[in-house]
Image (cartoon, rainbow, N blue to C red; front, side):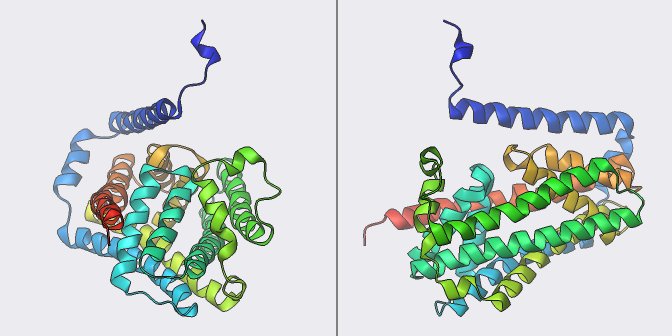
Length: 331
């Protein structure tokens, strides 16, 4: 029997996608090191400036604070405040789940609601924290993407290769929160049955209508949450600039902003787990396009990924396991 007539199991497809991502990343590194100076690359890593590394690390800690402050704004408005230390733990949990089980961020969204409810938050307020954060996130994401295009135009680098993906992303950024708000109003009655059966989308659809209307329609609250999410993007961009400076390059926040935003858009539009390969390739290419030597661009990008992805995964994994054990422990 021809095995090609049977689709590969989801687990096998997941491993194949992950392997493809690693191959793309390895190929990128080999290509840049072939073009660049290997000795210069290793010298930059050895001569990293500790003060700028500390600054980059502090900026990354600030991103979790900003994320938690966005949730706190919604919960305070709902009359169900939580301590920042607890919201900070959830931020680490959500990152870990989103990266390990991407599912378009759905897994992390379900975890957010579960953790808030487990801490005593009314379910309606927890769902509101998710929906308002989602709308605020994509609203500011789209705004910053447009600003990035303007910055590229000022650098005379706004080619069709860049404008096309950004336009596609803007459509996605509009569609996702619009779909979430539409589902809240109409439920999932108009959706095909197979969509409703997709885990964890089914779980999210079953609770998305529980958010209180006044919180969802509160424009002042939405603006505050969008501002906190905007600070996350800006902190990540400045982290990239600090990484480049730590490795002996110039401190160029505007250049780093363009590269980081374009790389983030590439991750949003591609299905690779954890954005492996797509983020590194796009960020390195954009930095090189804007005048940063390829070896320095790659080194700064990999250092950024270590701070934003690999290091947070360790505490995120520990906190997620601890939270599961706590939830299963009998009262």
